[in-house]
Image (cartoon, rainbow, N blue to C red; front, side, top):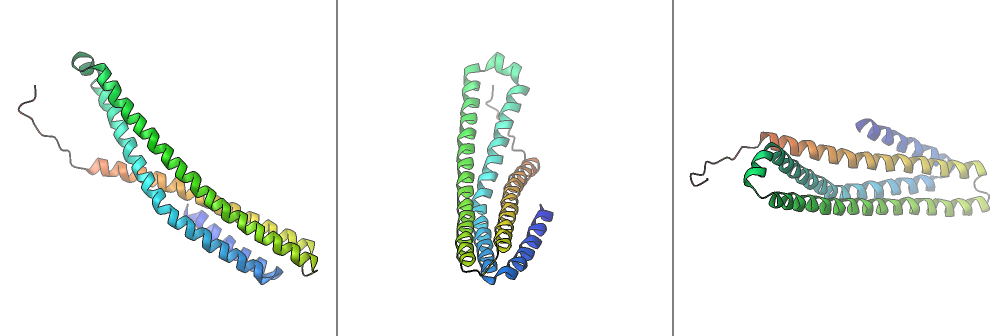
Length: 194
C-alpha cells in the first residue's frame, strides 16, 4: 500500500512537470483535480472506515453464532428448539446482508463521485486541448501527451483508491479480531440456571 502511495506521488510530480512543458494551465488543472480527488477520498474515507468496522463486528458476531451452534450441536438437538436456532441465525444473516448492501451502495456512490471528478478532468482538458489545437498553440503530440498523462494518472489514482478501501476493510477486520481476542470474558455463574 505504502509503495503505491509513494509511486503515485512521484507520478503526480512527474506528470505535473511534464504537463508544464506543454502549457502551465494543464498542470494547474491536474493539480486542482488531484487536490479535489484526494479531499473527496479523505472525506468519504471516514464513513467508509465506519462501514468497514461495523461490517467486521457483524461478521465476528455471525461467526461466533455459527461456532457456538456447531460446538453445541448435540445440546441444540436435545434441549433447544431447532427452529428457534435457525430463526436466530437467519435474523443475523439477514442483518449482515442488509448491512453489506448498505456498505456496498456507499462504495458505489463513492466510485460515482470519484468518476465524476475523472470526467470533469477529461472534459476540461479535451475542451482546452481542442481550443489550443485549433489556435495552433499545441501540436498533435502535445494533445496526445496531455490525454495519455491524464489517463495514466487517473488510472493510478483509481487503483490507489481501490487499494485504500481494501486496506481499510482488512485493517478493520484485524482490529476487531484483536479487540475480540483481548476483551474480557464476561462469564457469570447463574445459580438459578437449570
